[in-house]
Length: 118
Length: 117
Image 1 (cartoon, rainbow over the protein chains, first blue to last red):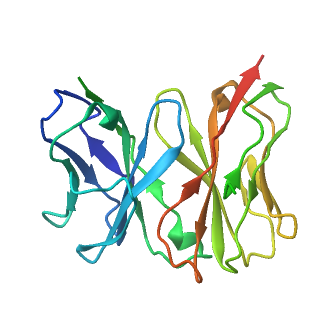
Image 2: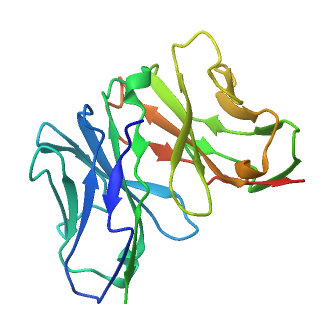
């Protein structure tokens, strides 16, 4: 069964360093997302991406964050200068379609990247 | 107001018994999707079941069923014949559609389910 993959599974970085989190969405999916989950808290939406551009972003997704689809399979999240509060689990997700009320809008999540900023 | 409310921080159930995890939602959008995800201790987020706002019947996926009561705005997850491997955190989520035209899933705070032998 197709699945979303993410690398690395864990990343430890120093405050102020840049990190790139990588994702390979399900191959026939058109919509891609990043979410984060700070330890013990709710899952929070960061950004959605469709047709090579950002479709929607949250207040969390400030100028320190960027997303890119560098080729036909990868989808990346870059954090330019990490802060301590960026420590979280970052999930990539993808969906076939985005029309609400149909099963094709289901977002399938990858296993996550656990980021720790020291 | 919270868009997704899960009032049970923790639930216990004995193996082979059924359990219901509660979820209420708040939206004025006529078109929306409701989802349940399972998060084991390893951290991944596993999709379980989907219910569209226009679906006439309750969704079912194997041992999972969604008790969808639209007028009450509730979307409770029922797990039948619980197994030890069902012990995990369970999240209810919603995506609003036509009026809000948003991509994001809004998650509840989750319910931790413990299945005991």
